[in-house]
Length: 222
Image (tube, rainbow, N blue to C red; front, side, top):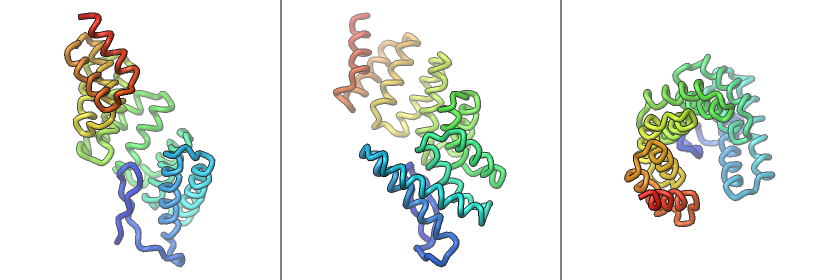
């Protein structure tokens, strides 16, 4: 058994490639997804889209033969998410959860899709469910970041502070996350800790204009 890591930290189990095996399409779909992500990271979007489309084709074909294939559901929903087809993520994710209601790969991606559809209550429910069930899971830091985003948008700054603080503790190397933490601390009036967060964002990315503006604003306020 081979464990193949898709981008984002998830693990898909598959045997070595064998074109005669029904699960081969799942293996190929994962490879297409990964290639698409790599091309997307290099701003080669047209090429990435071709790989994403092939991943979707392979996953839907696999699921037509085996509607209980959770790995295929996982790769399919990840791919649709990269294509910004959030409503389709919800549709396929819902089908997957009817097969296995505790597949946390699906639970987390559903939370992301609902967030981008601006259904923040459902997004929060899925993200909290994921974070509570697997607090040290591969996507826990991302789940906490999205929880922070929702609370920030709802102007629940103390709640957002807790969520963002957890996110940066789990994954401390992302300047955006520190900036968001600084912004909600500033909004809550926690000036010293807001300064600390803005400084960390600037340490990670010295060209982060918004973080620099935030830090200057707090310096001027005393």
